[in-house]
Image (cartoon, rainbow, N blue to C red; front, top):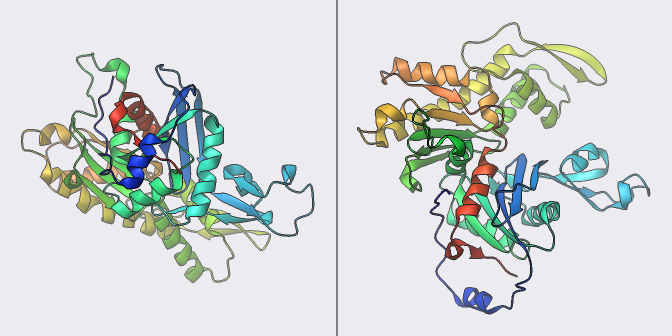
Length: 378
């Protein structure tokens, strides 16, 4: 079983002490869950305590849709007033869409609470639900408190753990740990987790990372979308493309490295198809990500001990949605080679990247000791 050293519970205050004496139903079954609460998409994995069973595995767009006033009866199924995830996006004409998170932190607490209530219903509304949640590297105390406040009364107990560390736990193949040739990513690796709101880098060397082992950069998928959108509005004024349309273009055509031309993309503007040459626009925006990540990558390599750094350079792993940018592993590896690093190897975590943080959180929840869980009550 994985041993996890989670964030220390806060110093007990009067309200916390009171929460320890609140009567709790002892007959409720305990459900353990790992939650990757992402800026654009969230992943929840859950199962009963005391087993290896994974009963719930869902990926949900992190968005809440509040139904507009005056919508005709029957337009929204069940005349619901709030929609979540894919349902909210499908009904975008009839709802006000709210993204609870921006740059990896909660910016709309009420929407976040509504979204987390929905996550709760996906698992088990009546269970004692204990959830390990991934947070960006070096998340500020105020942002952690915001998460605690939002889950209060929704989840029963909580762990907050850095996302890149959880990605390493999730990426780890537990079935191969005893194989002599298996390289355990939790032993000595460097993870780069590129999400929608933040890019998080972390040294993983067999222990819970310190603040010095982590770097969080507020530049990731959403920021790339913004740069592309700005360039499109300059080059094609009045194009009318939404941020969602720009994101879809980026996800289909993103790359780093030398400019790729021609890169003609079909878009619908004013109901009419049009071909736009976007090779330079997309390349410039995506290469900005490399410019932000690479200095942080080399700074963390320098912090590793001289005895571990050669092996570390063989285990640089990119995960998160940004790992799908074409050529990102090749470009980062080439930059390291050109700067004289010893035989670096940068690889992608693979197609299951959407689940790794949540899977690592689920493993951490299963391994957590009773005294590591924080009570979160109203």
